[in-house]
Length: 140
Image (cartoon, rainbow, N blue to C red; front, side, top):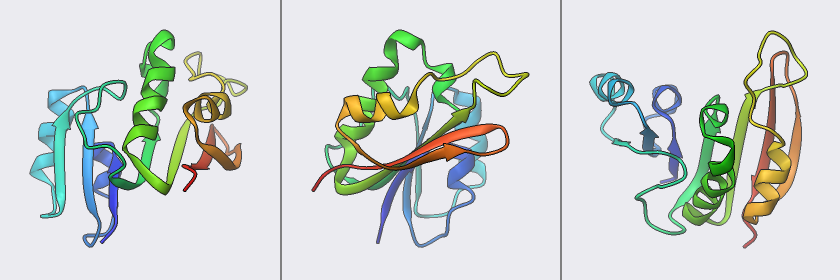
């Protein structure tokens, strides 16, 4: 069984066979997600830069449309935490608003730089209509 860590709204879209741990700093978002949870889902009120999760325990870590909410000075710490909980050979998917696209004044900065500074190796990155993303792997 795969283990994933993601944010609550994404957890609801995942298949029931994956064990997911979702974190969000909002008690309201966590309560909403818990009401719709499948048995393999767990939830915690937490911030990405301080995950109370075991080291190297997740096959996939996702962070979508949340990085711009993390204070800029704490984003490197958030990516280090995501790296810490990713298993060797595990993957990261990070996506946020594209700063080149308007009308989104909030954006996360250089996702590729944040991921590589944490230790991930970039496998792919790109742009979608309103977003940019990075897919990376923690070296085995």
